[in-house]
Each structure stands twice: as structure tokens, then as C-alpha cells.
Length: 522
Image (cartoon, rainbow, N blue to C red; front, side):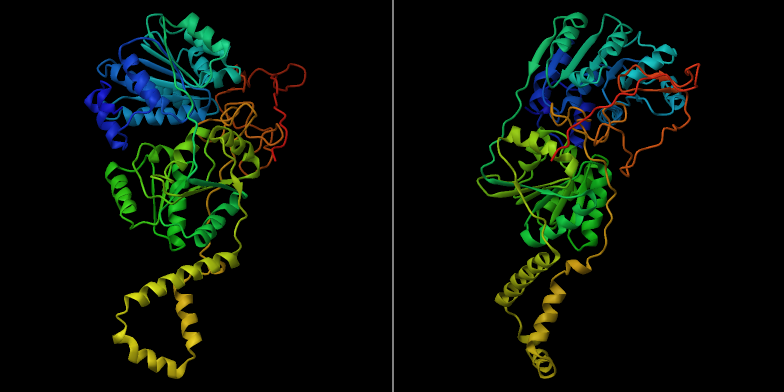
């Protein structure tokens, strides 16, 4: 179903068109009309199915921009998801001049207070920090007309249920409530029963994918190895039309720049690009002027791209649904396709979750050596030379060629030609890609125990851990010393602690340390 058929306002359709989307996802098509009608909705669908737009578009359409009161509240489980939701709501409401403020733990609360004083139409926040603002009287929910609970089962897993109920009690009873969850445990059903009015329950079945035409591989590699391994695979596999998927906008920009430095015709697309730039990049890719398109999930979803021979997942996707969307770009119309996913050792659990969804095991692939990559380059150079010889048109150059043959051996001249055409991986331009943390994982599912829409979880006690303990970006244990702030920190259970309350006997902070002990994955 097209977005134009859903009853959305012109300014919202303009924002959707600017993002390059035409077709609504199943959860969007099913819930947007219900939400626009004003009823309470429970949307049950896997992550990566477009739920932010499913609740965001009706909420934004309902907002009266002439009214400076707070009208929408979105509760999200993690700071990363809250930030990304705020960014997407801002993009969707840009033409309507909607103001969206995000609040989350571990950040400067004074800056958030200033933002709240600026009369946002929508506030997005994590439970712990929302409660803190409510207690400080810096956030008043008496005018909220639309309440959204996003990733409700995730918040339940993180111990936020009690906090959520406290927040809901601050919101007027006469409101619209939209609840989205991948699963529907009894506690979530109880929220629907106690805090919603005759909600419509929309359940979207998770897609199962048959991919007979797609050869699926994975390469286990450390974060700093992935770029060199990927370019060697390009040399060996000789892809005709390639999409590389990165997790973040920064990642996409760095990968596109690095590939250009290595001599590949590559460009990236992500949500920060203008619509005109996105369209020009896609046009160049479809016409063959680009060899490699680097994209985020958001930028690539909903776009019609055909003829792709290879998909490389530079970063393993946050959820299985995204993997389905990614590799579905190749193997179309009965043609064969190849998918290669790079996995760090700590992310192997995600690989198994993806395999369970696709009902197909990925084959391990050994990273090519520099020698194998050079052989691939030479093979491509030979094909290029043969093609040029078939074209002929060499008469003008025969005389000079004869003169060279008098001074040099023919084999040396051909070797020089091959050296000119083939890139030697051993002498490749060094490219540094900023490392990102591996996705956290537990056995309940790839997105459980980690932010299902990317980034690391700093709002959760589960954290980015290898053995149940916290680690920083460099993989080291951080010190116990914490940065000065307003005195409040979100804790993993959402209840928070006040750093100003100390144990009277020894001055230590009186709060529980909670760790998750995990079995080592592969």
C-alpha cells in the first residue's frame, strides 16, 4: 500500500517522499489508519519493520503547532533508540515545524531542562530520566494527547515496568495510547488491559525468507580487519553491482571515502543527504557509473534497486528483519546473488538468530590472502585487455609498439601493462575505519539485551559486555570514577540512584551493581 492511500496530510507525504519511500510496510499500512482514527492501538511486529513512522506519522498529524503545550510522549528503552526516534520524528515533522526534545540518562540534565523549557510538541525519553524530570517538575505531562510505548517488551526485560506505570499515571486518562512490541508477554497485556481503552491489536507475522538464489556466507573478522578483507573479496569475487551496508551514517561516509581511496567507484547514501543528492547517487548506481553503493538500512529500505549481484554486510544488522531486507536486494528475477556478512567474534550470536529466521545456514568463508587478491586483480586485468583487443582499433599504435619491442622484452611490456591495470593489495592506500562496539547479545534474540536499532546500550545494566562487565570503546574496563553531572544517573533497572546519597559509614555510593554473566559465544 502506498503512503498516499493512508490519509496522511500533504506536509507528511512531502517528508516521506523526501526520504525516498513510497510503499508502506505492513505494520505501517495496518496501524496508521487506526491511529489516525483516534483509537488505541497495540502493534506487534519485529524490529526493523518501520514502527517509528507507524506511530510517528499519526502523532505528528494530530499535533496543533499553534498550541505550545506538550502533546506527544514517546517512552523508549534505551538512550540510542530514544535519540534515533527523536531524529526520525524531527525529519517526519520538519515541514510541519514540529519541535521534538529527547531526554535520557547519562547526559547533561541542565541542557535537557533548557530544551524542555522551549515548549517541545513531542518528548522522547528513557523511563529513568523521564521520571527524574517529572520529580524535578521540569516535565509536566498534563497536556499529553498521544502516549507511545515503543519496544515495550524490551523495557519489560530491562526492569522498567514499574517506572512505566508511574509515568503513565502522570498522563491524562483522556488520551490516545499506542503500544508497540515484538512479543506480547502477560505483563505487556496487562498494560494494555489497565491503561488502554479497547485497543485494536495488529499483529504482523515475522517474514520467513526463502533465498534459493542467494549464496549466503559469513566471514569472521576482527573490527580492524574488515575493510581490508572486504576489498580483497572485491578483487577475488569481481562483483558487477554491489551494495555495502553499514550500521551508522558515519560508517557509511568513511566506507565510501575509503573505497574511493582504494580506486573503487563508490558513493554512500544515508538519512542526512538531501533528496536531490540521494536520487543522483541512486541514478549513478543504477546506470553503472558506480561500482559500489554504501548505505544504511534506513536509506536503502523501500528503494527499488535491481541488478545487484553482491551484498556485503560490513556490519551485521541489529535485527534479523534488516538482514532479510538487505540481502533481498540481490538474487532477484531468478538471477543468482551473493551475500557476505562480516561478523566479529562477539557477534556470533546474532548470526545464529539470523539463520533461525531465514531457515538457512550461512557458509563460513575464509578471508582471501593478499596473493589471492592480486590473482583476482590480474584476472580482471586480463579480461579488460582481451576486451580491448577484440575492439581492435590499434593501427595507430603499431609503429610505436614495434619500436618498444626493439628495446624491451615483450614479456616485460605485458607485465608493465598488467601492473598498470591491476591494483596490488600489498601496496594499497591505508584506510582507517573508526571502530564501533560489537552489538550486545543474549540468547532471547539478537535485539534482546541490546539496542535493536543500533548503537550500544548505556542506559542498561546489560551493557556491552563480554563477561557481564562493562567495557569502553577500546575494550578496557573503565575506572569507577564517574564524570561530574547534575548528581543523577540512570541505572540499568531504570530506578536510578542519587550520587549525593552516600553510605554514612564509608562514603561509598549506596546502589546495587548488577551484572549479567554470559556464556562465551563461539
